[in-house]
Length: 460
Image 1 (tube, rainbow, N blue to C red):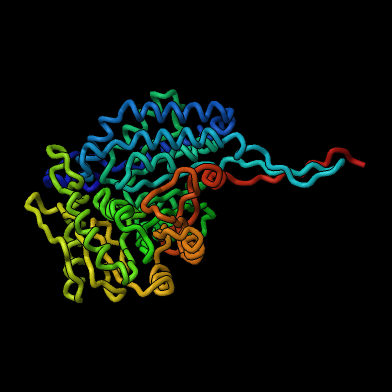
Image 2: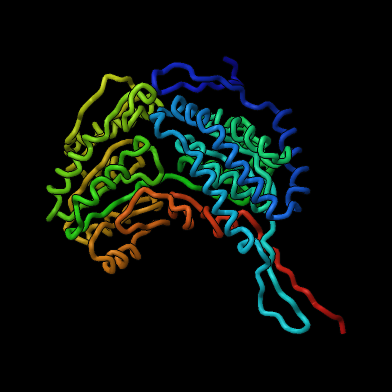
């Protein structure tokens, strides 16, 4: 394999799923030139027509649901029956379409008989969108649909773990009648992406991925005046108050910890439980964990398949072993002989913040539970993190829960829910979890620039 090629190794069995070549200089230049040329006409396409095209794109992606889901399963190991993300992608386009006219209309400011003042949201220009592998189809709603509706053009760099998703998306755009050059996929190496960002090639960069990757993007854009949007990692906490209904919430907590094998930026990775109910909660969680079966993602209808690669599985097992060596206890420890990338769901107790498993993003199916004395200690521990994506509190006392959530340092907070990127609310983090917001009115506006109009009606 040449230095300009990359290989997708399936975590299912460690075999090669496909091979692709990174774009060379000529292809990169041609696609960027095509995007810049297309921007001039695309920004003038009536908003209703842009919305209709993006919504047709969503339908074309749904028409490719089987191929997309098959790629998700073989590229990252998610069970095939859970791998179709096209409904969510299409819904993003539909919801954006509902609010686009109002959001992107002129915003009036105080005026009088002689002066009219308003601000017009105008397209930011050429966007580079960089997509992570863990929800490789659904996230295109934020990275592609949203900036396109706002009148921008998009070059998509997908993860080298999921390149076929990008190819199918470009195919779907053209099949929907989308103009050439407005949305293009490009298999960029990390080095080429950073070089182009540092050269000020793009007006904006939208990145979903790791903290380390996001910081490299941010550093590359330094001094270029490129707008940077970052959705990064999380170490999301949940606090179970003494008055919480354990029987009703435990299935949600398990799903928040284990869905997609824990490979979600908003997975529940830290669980703080009032000491008065700690043992009852742990018993219920262990029983619920037994339902999260692990198996072959194509041949079995299991809840979990492998994690994305053997190196990730080894890192998860290493953090578990380090925690146990420091005094934590594994309560499930089921093991599996399916392969090196398979990690069963686990419950860990006896943890504290001296352990890396309570401080570093794990991205694996592990529920780590720590007993707390009450609200004050729980809040202090929830906020004792470099991350701030989402957090949840579970209680029957809604007013007290809301008051506590107001003190939690996170971009999204939940009462009696978790691990849910709500398409009706702004989405994004604080601290090392990122910059900016996506979804709806907020997301659309953040892909535009407010152009201020001062109109003097008459002279003299």
